[in-house]
Length: 110
Image 1 (cartoon, rainbow, N blue to C red):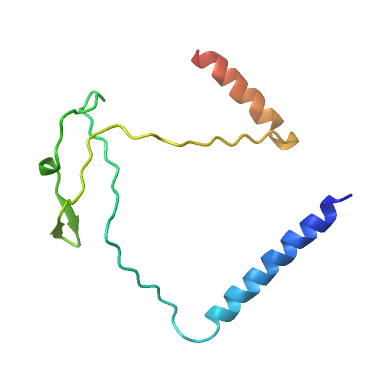
Image 2: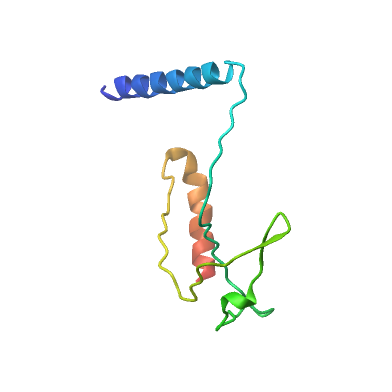
């Protein structure tokens, strides 16, 4: 079988990366990452109590705080944006009983 060497290679890579992490943290120095961010994206949807979306909002309708300090909203876009979505389905034998339950639930939802 050709899967055996692949699994062995992946296993060895995992062990090597784990050892590298242990060596880096065992060096005795605290590990700190500093990063300056110029733009933070916040995706926001505003809905009424009945679940309908509130149209026509502007950046003046929002207040952004960081550690209690107001931040400037430099970019504001009030449009629908495309969404990329992925769906993973486990079709292994261990999921067979669950798959039957999902199939039944899917038929009931229609």
